[in-house]
Length: 145
Image (cartoon, helix red, strand yellow):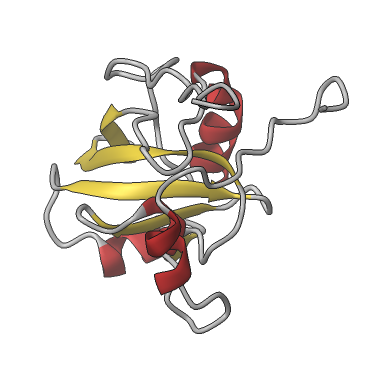
């Protein structure tokens, strides 16, 4: 249960074999994006989709599009996760498209404030909500099924 005003924390709920392949602390997590210089160094192609997570520290992390979200998160819980495309706009880096689609974490659409705060922290302009359809939270099977 979350304290009012604190972002919801999402644990990994995807396939266990994928989680086991992640070696937390081995440096395999996503690239932390703190500002424009990080994006200039890491994003060679504007509009190219990336996997993203927002770590519990509130920082945006990017990884190549085909990366697993749990690997981008270095095996940890997240405040948000999905797919993102970025471009350079007149005011600097901005979101072209963004979703909360992650089949490893299934973050609710209400994770947007944590995602927006991470984008703000990184100096990335963004829309006021996800631009792609939402990702309904995965329903766990009832016991005995």
